[in-house]
Each structure stands twice: as C-alpha cells, then as structure tokens.
Image (cartoon, rainbow, N blue to C red; front, side):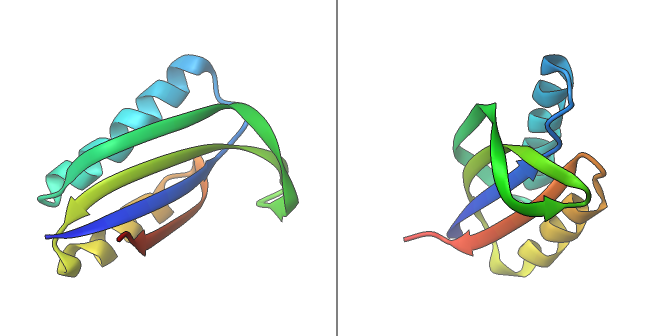
Length: 95
C-alpha cells in the first residue's frame, strides 16, 4: 500500500449537510477500493479560484490523506470525476 494525498475542489453552493455527505462519499470510495483514510481536513470557507472551473469562481477545498494499492487509483479517480459536486480532484503520491 502506498500513501496518497488528494485535494478536492467542491461546489461552493452546497449546504453544510451536503458537504458532510460528500465528504463521507469520498471516504467510502477509498474504503470500497481497499484503501484507508489516514487524515482528512475540510477547509469550510469558500475560496476564490484563480480561474473558473465549470463556471464556478469559488470553491471549497477538501484535503484527504489515504493509503491504497497503486492499481486502484485509476478507479478511485474515475469515481470522483463522475460526481457532479466535485469540480476538480488531484491525487498525488505522498511521502
């Protein structure tokens, strides 16, 4: 298992409850693919984006550290790209 770090940019117009549900969905995708979330932070305030993403000028950032097998990262990334509430995701290998 390798260590990974994922940064998510989420739609800013989600309610607090929807944000928590989305955060749980993010964790579930990792767990379903044999991974384990080791640390997670939600930056709850809106932040201005440098450029519009899917017509949004602001976003809420989630930072998730997790462990997973390298061959499951493509499946995990694909699941996040299908979620309409996630504007952008970047998954990188953590040291």
